[in-house]
Image (tube, rainbow, N blue to C red):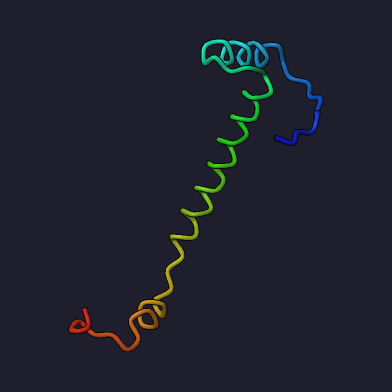
Length: 74
């Protein structure tokens, strides 16, 4: 995997959590813990976007999606 080195500053309690999580889940490095956390954050953002998009209802779509079909076609 291609990786770019990044330096960040975190509060001591956050670093302690990262280290504890790393040890208890047998993760090789702190970087992998941070990567996992960011992946989960990205998934949350994507899920929120999908929820928002699914709430956008266009009544014209139902008519267009069924254009030319009737119950007998199924």
